[in-house]
Image 1 (cartoon, helix red, strand yellow):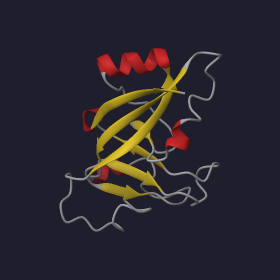
Image 2: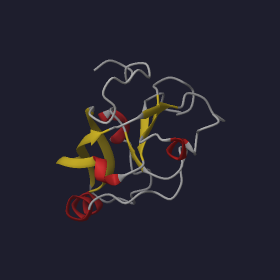
Image 3: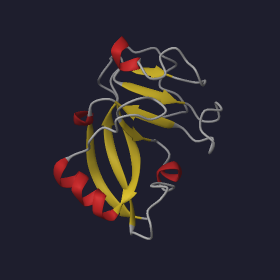
Image 4: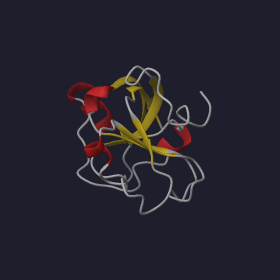
Length: 136
């Protein structure tokens, strides 16, 4: 798979599917499995569902679980048209979807995420399918 999404070159936009992960509580994992994802209203990349190709990154979430049982969702994500956002203040940082992109991608070690791990934001939850719930 490599560390990028083909350097922005897309011969077949919308057909690429990646295994990604999402960290949550076990209660919310079950809810997501049965009801699907809901977009966050805002975040570093604006509204969408925040996921990562890094299982390690997903294992760190949620940040404030209050002692609840944690889970990692293993996902199949149809990324569609991807926009690389690799610095704070990028002109499309929160508006990428309005410019025709389906997913925003923050590469690893670009300085935007304190962990140095990659992060993605998928605008449309219907692009995401839960494959497995992994106790964390």
